[in-house]
Image (cartoon, rainbow over all chains, first blue to last red; front, side):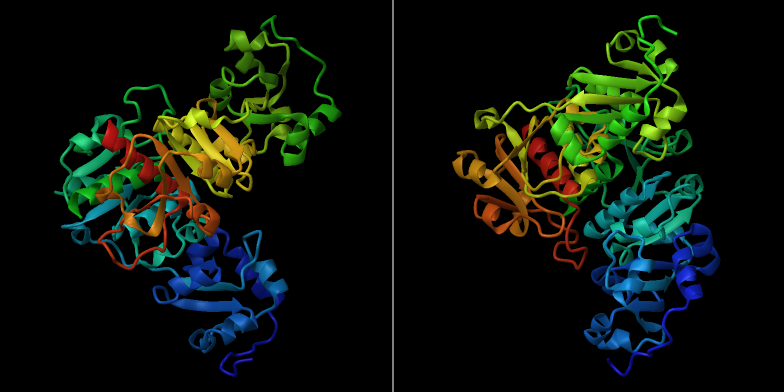
Length: 259
Length: 259
């Protein structure tokens, strides 16, 4: 074993219980912490978030000198990791990070393309949207207070590490959109064909809830209503696209115009 | 109660057990059946699949005269539906359908744009891809034999009814792609920028596995390798897009060229 690793006493029952309790939002809120599992995900998050403690196999530590030297490093067995894991197949590393909460200043949106999520509820969708934002160089994702928590373990896993590079802000969406001088876009069944519209390099793209779409209050603040046409146009089809899918097609089209 | 509904004896323990067993692939295969839950989904599937039996609340039947007259209609309580449901929030209808297995003739692909999935494993991804296919008028989705089963309850739910309008064929993908004279497209990190390439109105778009992408054997048969550029081009970012997201952006771009 790497001598830099503090080989603490085996994980106590209390610590295992506490780590397991981080699956609960209430506990994450109180502690200001969240967790992530898996080598790639943890590697991506380590430079971006302050690490509280890290629980991993000897193999993991010996292959990662720097991480092994961390104060909160615990060498654990596969069996212990299995008890901690929120997933079916336990990973070789489980890490606890401190949440980032920098506060939100609307000037960070100036000159940029950003996303605003109005009550997206599915953790997989939020995680996938953060991954899309990262791919398309969107630095800021605004979330209504009713949007699923970004530190939900399912969201964290679904971001595939993109969380390290995208800032997610929980805000009063109505207030922010009222105040902004940026164009506000959104996709609606009654919108204008996105391929026929001028799209600006800066602005906010609003995406809505899985079942109910964008709320009436937010909809009033969308100055540019867009529509992703189906094929052939006007054909009977699925009523809508999944919110992450619609986000992806919209972001791709905005970026295609400005590459 | 609508008199057209056969009010059979309350669901027997054996029938409940049998219905629950349809969550298992082995049982679905043996019986040639699958199930779907929820008013909208069942409404979408009823015209497209032969219904074996339907279990719903009195309210559901009384609001749907035709369905109530079905021979296999069972009025059940919310509590009974809860026992049947594979979901957290039980729906007011649970329906069992006969699988469709028409066999596959490659001529159905001629003149059309189709999708081919090389070992997509996540049920949510397959369901979302079928929904994307429906939106973009793609009638046929080919799946390698290793791709997750389309009648998996999570896939069926995620299609949001699109399964009624898209034909899914499990085939020897290598063989089909070897035989076809259609252009075969795929997205790869080393592909050509999709926005700079000519895209045809007919062809097959191959999408790969979540972790491993397209297999080497299939990759050799992809004549047109494409790449969805990130933004700004060449920037460090997530390593890849989710497979359903990449499918959506690719299909949208193909259709944009031919609207």
